[in-house]
Length: 235
Image (cartoon, rainbow, N blue to C red; front, side, top):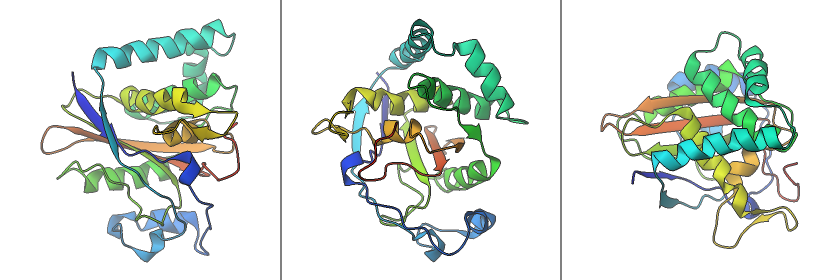
């Protein structure tokens, strides 16, 4: 078994966003000099709860296959269609970026949500944060607690074999813990990563993957507009 961990954002504890007067573009223009305590990052408040669990690479490959089959069986866009659409929404992307986008859009297609567009500005921000984590591979968010401006999912995997689809599938696997009727996570479980992926008002995503100095993998994705607003359902 391989270990991986990521930070949950409990849907029921996320507070409303309050956007700052400075623009999102100006935030990204200064990513090379940002630190987690930079005042530019302080805009809203979320409660972060950390957790760990184990799952094998084989299980994740199975999850990815299942997601595709389920999409086909429900009459939604099949993998080939999602691939072609995502490729058009990821112009100039390298294969890693396209993989991140395809697996996000597979999850969204299951809920008949519009596909996300891959955004290079969000990718730059994600790459900056992944670079900060290269030395220690610490499972941390780029924003200080109470300072989220973007949606953000992070992932850590033991060993260098973890791919973008593994991170997305790990986050999407939280669907089983989301109760649409009560619009909350099952008690004691997390579902905020999943709800961010399928959030209907989110339109863009940008991600980064880095192999840390200890040989483990850190991945992060940022979303805009962000999701997980209290009192709103994801779809």
